[in-house]
Image 1: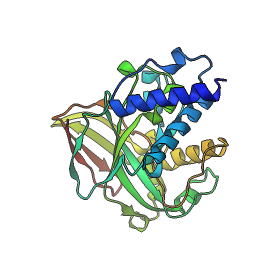
Image 2 (image 1 turned 135 degrees about the horizontal axis):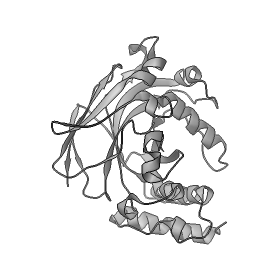
Image 3 (image 1 turned 120 degrees about the vertical axis):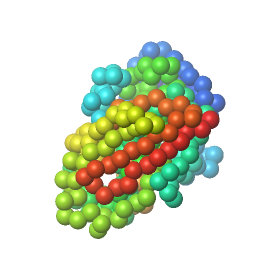
Length: 273
């Protein structure tokens, strides 16, 4: 296992790359025995540096919950990272502009976001998880890669803060709005992702490990096995992973989502430098 000094050095290098929009050689190819355990330690150091700078963690993101994209990136398991008040935007309307000039090779991911009213137990029961949620929203996560051409291994993505760049959270819909079929609706709803007037991809709720609630169950279980990780708390939000392919975005483009089968409004976002 890499020693603590080396892991702090890796963390510093990645944070500089994040802050200055630089790219790096994947650490799995240049640091001996750099695996998931080491990568989460690196991510923890970066997290501490972010908080020292004044960022407030307000939730988590889960990445690679969509098995349909695993072979594309050579990553065959979900990862998680913190999201912050500095990276999350709560939308006041369905049309928004977003600056991406500070991100490295940004891509768009339509997701489902949930917010916890109470601390969830360690369980894989969707009903027990749902009991702790007060609202659900549609969100768009902007992800980025500080490794050129999106070539990396799972540990590299963990160390790079789960590839998180920004999260746009649509209008929250309180749980009592959805009715008794919400668990099945979260599995079965469909979503389209378009650029301009062109359909670029489509997906469904089940693409997130079977359901956004099952993705959260996975996160709860993984965190419980990591001795330095804090459990999910009341007041946190979780974005549960992309429902489509993660597609490259460029300034000047307008992307829209539409959801069918669940009462969540779509989002229209225009990207700027």
